[in-house]
Image (cartoon, rainbow, N blue to C red; front, side, top):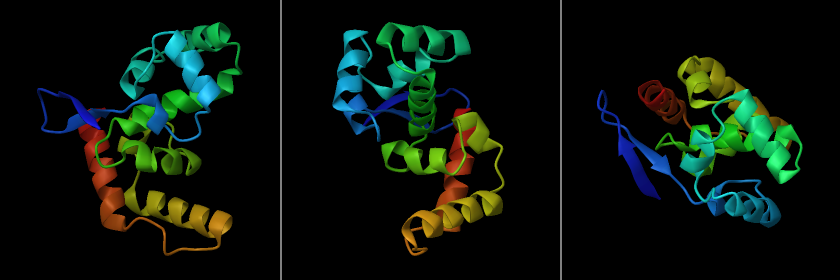
Length: 145
């Protein structure tokens, strides 16, 4: 949980996490990424900025491009301090594909999407992050993007 860097135009510290913290990444895939020199979420984000770069990495790892797209999306979202690895998977499942995408979301709409996701998958709504937390994610995404 190390700060990565501070942007000159804002005060949000982007985060960089060990790949082991990224949800849904198998030990085998983590080892494959490490063999390619990718050990943190920030490295993964930087090396998967374009569709061509994602395709190249998928080819190098001999995995379906969908996996690389998912990992890249979570790495993008994990850079946001209040999201991190704790909520990046939740946001991805709620339809948010990147920090830029999150920055463009309306707080009420996103909160509703997350609430529906929790109810549909866990039959619970008490685990849904507060609307204030969702607003913080969006505000920080605007500063990071």
